[in-house]
Length: 253
Image 1 (tube, one colour):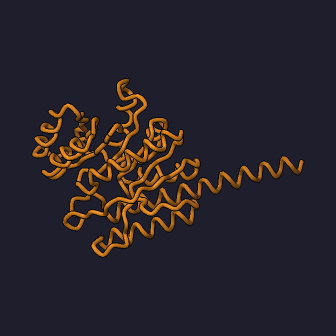
Image 2 (cartoon, rainbow, N blue to C red):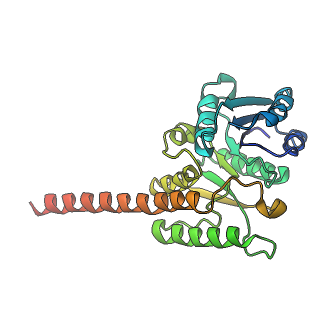
Image 3 (spheres, rainbow, N blue to C red):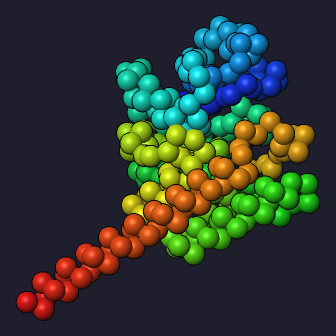
């Protein structure tokens, strides 16, 4: 894998070490891990991983949120001359994104790059399977339907953390608003409005222990996500309407 694998982590499970080992065994050459304010007893995990030549660890002294962790990682990557031109794949630390699926995203990004196409690649889960937790399937299906209705772009998994971002879009990603989970929705709405293509790769749907390792707060974080989803659309609609009125007035004059 040529892409840089970015993994934000808050109090990751012990299996995080073996997961990173599997990624390296699958061909990952560059991994950037963000310790987003983990508790002291978790520090040994990052110390172990930092010994791997393929791994770089960034540390937040306190929890700053997934969005801030991703943006800090993107900023760091842009400052490293040895990584110039490489795409980025974001993954979660709970082991839900199998190394084989990370590899598939890397291959898809290489394919798009070969054709000169710049797109965000999403690793999309199948929420119609019986073993998917109800809160995950219901929330994602509703959000995906609303996203399609408002923005005219079909995305089957709006909350996936497995995403491929080409080098040329990294600076743009650093400037987006959102410090926590709402940042990922902001990424999608910005892409839809800016006509940045969103490509999908179906991935294995994995939920460990009924998704107990997730730090997503169903109430608080969902409110932030929907505020981004609806608020951005309203702003875009008002802007488009104002522009149309100006054009109409100018034509009339």
